[in-house]
Length: 289
Image 1 (tube, rainbow, N blue to C red):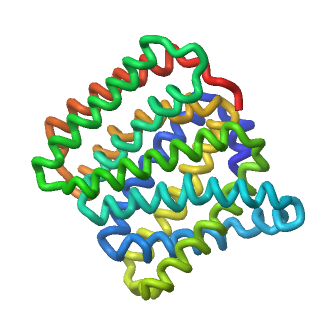
Image 2 (cartoon, rainbow, N blue to C red; image 1 turned 120 degrees about the vertical axis):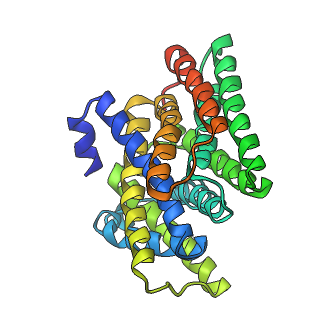
């Protein structure tokens, strides 16, 4: 699956696929927020994902030891359950998809800052630029009615993914398809228990909801598949830095699909954050995983 893609695709093609697939996840969160609560949408997204990837998960029951199951459980919570939970709840609170993607793009600076030997002034400048771009956009959103709580949810999602990325870089990884499949099982179980306890497990039987679920399955497998692929083959710093390119794609996509306005503050924030991409990509020497 994604492993074969990684063999055939070069770094540039892998990077382009990551940007497209990852930005589609924020569009999926917006779609889901329009048809159901975030817990219901995520539960059925992960249940369907787990079914699709089940053939790759079954061998893990014979191959994984206790330590590997524990590691995959931790990564599933950080990189999928908590991260997507924050993104979906932020969308439910009304945060624009482009802003959510831009806050998520702070992760490159944070990961590079924590995983690079011999930090230079340019690293600190990249972190400062990325933060300034996000702050400018966030101020504009607050003025347009977005709540502080929604911004905090998106920020918490970014921190969760950053922690998972750094752990994944340090831990030996099993086959990519197997990683995705096992983590989908963990996340499906996590959200099923949560929604069952909250009484929100039953899905709305509407075309819009199931379209959002299917979109989310494709975005999840493609986005995480290419994210883990680039992390494994090209390094965590490169994978995270490529995420700086997703906010612009997401903002344009959201404007076309949902008529979400692209405000001046958003454009300025994207341009400032884009400067961080060049600083971080040209000066990073990340430690190998």
